[in-house]
Image 1: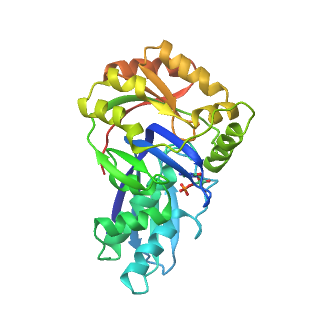
Image 2 (image 1 turned 30 degrees about the vertical axis):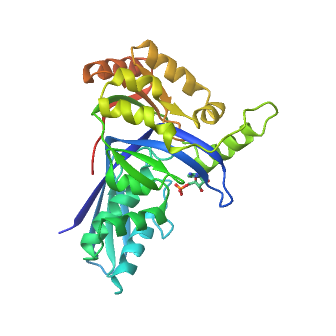
Length: 299
Ligand code: C5P
């Protein structure tokens, strides 16, 4: 019987990005929010004695590596190392629903779901904080992907403070072409170095407080004007049509719209599920790929 792990896509309700640090990462203050687009990972001991990784689900995974560089195997090796025992060959299946290079941390969700499934498959004695530490080694967004819900992220995103938030309704517009996260961060630095550009300051945890308070109060109308993404401007320079997508969603009645993470997915907030469905329908009629998603999903 296979062991299973599940993790969700994330969007950033706030993504305040500081200057590039000496280690190449950017200090940031973010408010993560999970939406109910799930990745599922199944792990079983291989019947043929060989490691294998296969994908299924609606996303085209033909460009993805199935080798040791995939975060799935990195997560498995971290869990296996924690047992102090050699691990058996494993058969892994990832059901992929989060777009690749979409700005919704699909790879990070694979890493998190794999940590959960591998812990059980290998009977690793890992508690929650040990899993969080392994997740931080895999990537900045992986600790959040272990939890879901809503959370403040600081450091490079890996230092988490879970916060309470309501279920929110989103129209999620995906894009056939992906954007590379390191490229968008690099473009953010380039834009900041342009003559006349505002000096980037180090974001503070307090920058998240108004949004955290609005989430606790639970009113989408109060949350909408506080959505902010510093990577939106560099993402739109790469993909100018994203600005049109946000405008189209607003015209269809969304309270607010932003690029998700480093893009190119765009998320539009509505007050109710019915409103979100109407926005999603209008975006589809305009030729875009859109789905309605519920925010606040927990693992
Ligand atoms: O942590 P993760 O592997 O997801 O990061 C991918 C890339 O995104 C990093 O190599 C870096 O270029 C960029 N990044 C960054 N600052 C962060 C998070 C990611 O510059 N806080």
